[in-house]
Length: 178
Image (tube, rainbow, N blue to C red; front, side, top):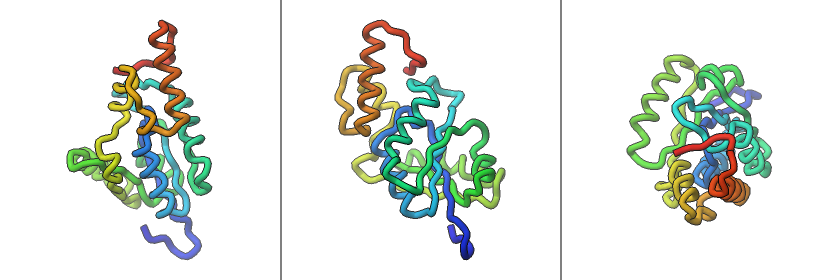
């Protein structure tokens, strides 16, 4: 993670963030302290059907991160390693909740290293209080009418409430999940 004199230490924190959780924001705020610039890259995961559109997820995260001057939120389509190279990032930041996350993350880090040898991967352990938290769990609980207000930022909670109220009223939504 060392940068030469005058070089900006730039990192990328990728994810689908569907929806952003307090666990994601924990990693973002901690990574923002470690690097001169943090680019939060909101990805399209072809293997998942998102609840929120890419544009909605970017907007939610931009609102969540507006107090962090060295963080910018952008959409990401395509290979993460190429994106990291294109923005001059020296590091890809990944959050780990439990040992079970490590095997997948290790595979991804190894592939990214193969594609972009100059880009390292930095793993940050989430705080204990978020170790169980995932976007999938948040969506499931919210869809079933449970209270997720302590798991997501207020703007995200409002969007979740609105989305699931619209679904239960039979209104069409841009995308559905689960």
